[in-house]
View 1 (cartoon, helix red, strand yellow):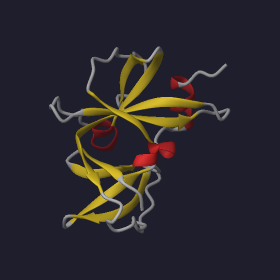
View 2: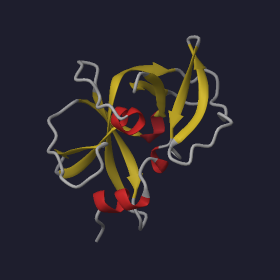
View 3: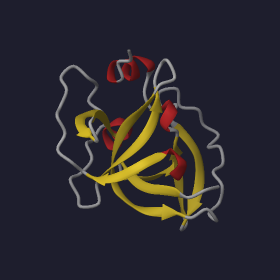
Length: 151
């Protein structure tokens, strides 16, 4: 296993593989979007590109991420319908720790959650279980296509 970023969403610890991360930035003011699911927190401009942001606490636990100093926006790569790569922001709390590559490799949870296909394997970190998030499975097709209009 390679390094992973640890964070919290809805009171539970999760992780993202370092290879999926472009950059981690402080939480910024987002422009809200009407007519999108509640977990789409809004958009902001990043290096000349408009980036949609998913609130992971809202997605996982129906409660928005708390405004903390440790709340961050994790910029990830997301592949659109025609294979074009886009930047997707993920708002997460306590996104300040790294899981070292010598931690236990993620193991399947043994549970398939049809409503949460983005939930990956579980790993042990400091006596607690940490669940990995699969960024490419995070958005339902209809939401992905509405956030990333491709030419």
